[in-house]
Image (tube, rainbow, N blue to C red; front, side, top):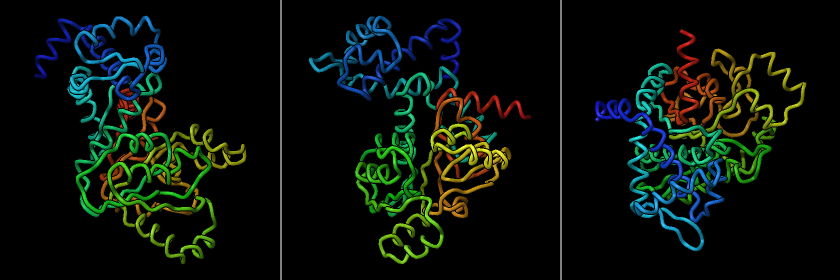
Length: 343
């Protein structure tokens, strides 16, 4: 198979572009159906003319169906999407890239999704889907899943479905932070639990309360129960940010930014701030997952895409054997460029 793909790339090099184009269209329809042609073009960041001829081909092959409310993917189309995912990964050499990143970062696993989240928002949904596919392979009865907030973990929750396990509990990894309500850790935890058929407990505490206040509130049985689940997490799903991105998202003041710069902060995940050596130099917030828990958690899954996340992925996960990285093609190439450039 590998030899055939290499021959195909040499003989018909345009096959990669054609296959990826039709795959991206099918995938966009699948995640947004029913969807009209104009809305589809907007989702893909392309003109209607760009998608029109491809839609005719997909319809003639019975991969999509055009209805009054918009286009939907047929059963045959869904089957093709699932098969194309692996085919395109092979064509683009993503399996080799996954192996290289896994070896260079010294992590548990690496999963690379074709595309660039900056150019195609559907890549985020695909990353969420592939993350849950991995979770399904490792999850066990009575496991505790903790989730951070953010768009990446929300994508995992939105692409979860019933899992064949019993008594799984999902909890937020952190207290509430200043963010859109829909991507708060509590919302992500509840959505995922309902999708997989598990239990969930919410943490109705702000992330930045004082240690003294947290100690007093921990006497509350409901809060103590959630904190106990968090301390016994089996699978942790989290997003991460570059220094510039986290400053922008949290609306830090100039004084706060200068303080973090003085610590040489380059990345953030789970309220932990990492320097250029991957060391934790600062921790914000007092509620939820603690730095001392991280190495004892069986599986930690970092989800993030775009070339701008590459440095953060490296600094947060490098040399940590319990880490799984789910990212996109753009970030993967940048990760390899950084790692090989540092040799």
